Amino acid sequence: MSHQTRRTLREMTVPAAIAYVLLTVLTLLARVVCLVAALVAEVAERLADAGSTACAVARGPVLVTTAGRAGGAA
Image (tube, rainbow, N blue to C red; front, side):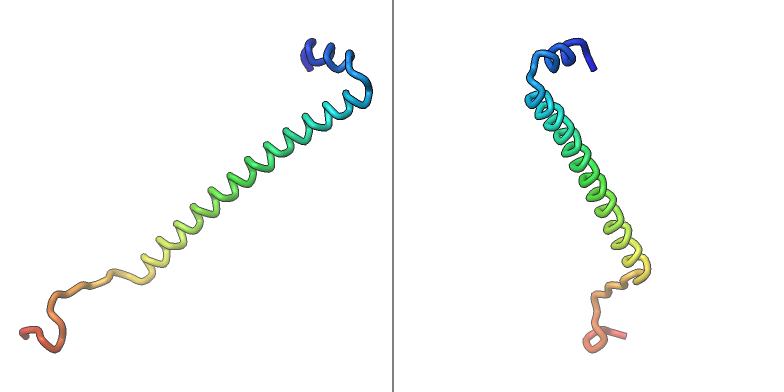
C-alpha cells in the first residue's frame, strides 16, 4: 500500500474504510471476472473455427463441373 493510501484510510472512519476496501476488492474481482470471460470467449471462438476447418477437411475436395449429366457432351 502506498503512503497516500494509508494516510487516506487512517483519516476515514472505520465503516468508511471498510466500505472503501470492500469496493476496491469488488472492483478488482469484477475486472478479473471480465478478463476470464473474454479469454473463455476467445478460446471458444478459436475452437469453433478449428472445428469448422476440420469438418471441411474431412468432407474432402468439392468438384464443381459446368456440364451436367443429362446435357453434357460425352
